[in-house]
Amino acid sequence: QVQLVESGGGLVMPGESLTLSCVVSGFIFSSYGLNWVRQAPGKRLEWIAGINSAGDSAHYQDFAQGRFTISRDNAKNTLYLEMNNVRPEDTGMYYCEKNIGSYYRGRGTQVTVSS
Picture (tube, rainbow, N blue to C red):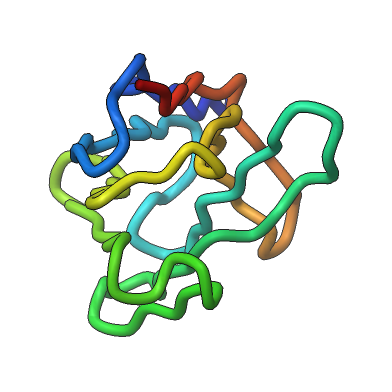
């Protein structure tokens, strides 16, 4: 059974940092590129960043470039998203996603940025 379990969200103030984690099971983690996506209230799902299977190549949406860092630990089957200098518009539910082959997405972790 495939599971993607996100954690690390919470309430943070603008300008602060936090790191999200996604623990994966049920498929060969090291064989697949993965993504972080998010959904703000009332908005569509939005791609944030993607990383290849080896973890040595990553791509970012414009709003994430320079503020967010996607990474992975293949030994721990874990995907990360480090978020720095967060903004109120970063508020939303954050999900890790596998969209190569069969599609899977976790249940998400809520990030709220507010002063």
